[in-house]
Length: 279
Image (cartoon, rainbow, N blue to C red; front, side):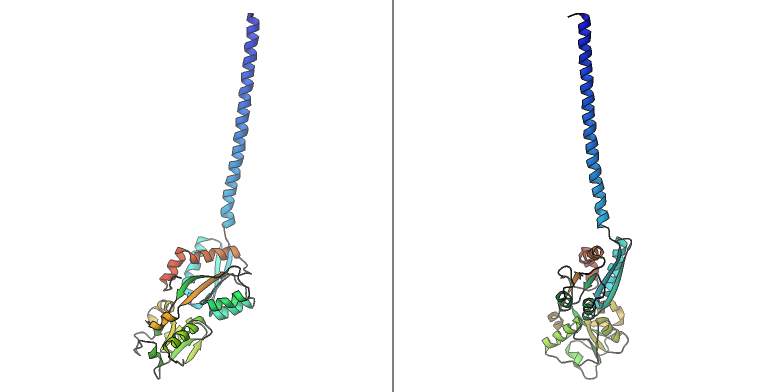
């Protein structure tokens, strides 16, 4: 082979090597671009997840009067955890709230003080999901500070001349009180029946009544305005508290997030700290 032929052959080999190298680089670049594209898609997808999970707007919660202090605190926590949200509450007797919901009142969440009052809403098919019990509550006697009438039992409430207030029998605290009275074989005629537990407690706080049968949580929330007296019959009338997302909720995502907070360890800490019992 002549020198000229050898030179031509080397030139062809080099040309082939360069072409091969360029092809390899092109393939790597294509692969890299493809990988970058996938990575970008994944990052975009990952970034959109929190966006879809982000909640905003107003959450309207209808809740039993006995939940006022603890739910108000949880509402403030929720608003801090989810900037741009507002939690509005309507507290009252569970039966009254249930009637409002079935009557068309706009609400996202319902937290009742008994399964019976929640059933008013579920029977009307107004819930989006089955209710879940998140706490329980037990009765206690609220007396004037210092317990001047020396009340030490449920039977003492039947003393002549003693002004006692009960919740209305249609309200969970009233139904529970009646159940405790029936369990002990006692008959009690109160000076008034109140539409929710806070109203019953206020009668004692204002010294318009000597005692009231309310929840432990309400006695605790009242501080030194009243004195609490436990009674064994209360164990026969412990109320379960169910919570549910409502079918016509205007802000279902935020409502679900609020329910999740109520049922979380953080929510449980607030509720048990207020005197509620774990379910």
